[in-house]
Amino acid sequence: MKLLLLADTHVPKRAKDLPSQVWQEVEKADVVFHAGDWVELALFETLAARSAHLVACWGNNDGPDLRSRMPERAHITLAGLRFTVVHETGSAGGREKRMSAEYPDSDVLIFGHSHIPWDTVTETGLRLLNPGSPTDRRRQPFCTYVTAEAADGHLRDVYLHRL
Image (cartoon, rainbow, N blue to C red; front, side, top):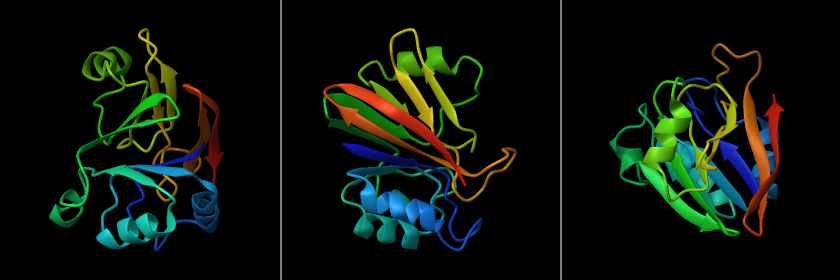
């Protein structure tokens, strides 16, 4: 199962649209995850229409129109893995311990907010993934997104793409 991980797109405030490379990945993905901060409903609707399957949550920059269409935290089991998607996880310091305690029934936690790519595994085995942002690099050298594959209870080929 091919996965695409996105967060913090901020369309149209930070970009008019997603980069064409990201739209190409959407077409290839079996599941697209988006960890919030869409900003406007139009991108959500377009991404939902163009994705084979969209799993998404809202972020702190998303208003009532977006919050009414998706949860603050999305949970789904795919290919034997329990995924959670949430926008904020708090400060980087102590994140692994906090998230292990908060999400004991998840195998993979996809998050956003910081625009900083993150890939760690906690002591409990929880995989934490932040794809960064494909449209707003903030303090990072590149805009980014993540692709991965899920099969038989394993996440593999996790790759951070630079734009």
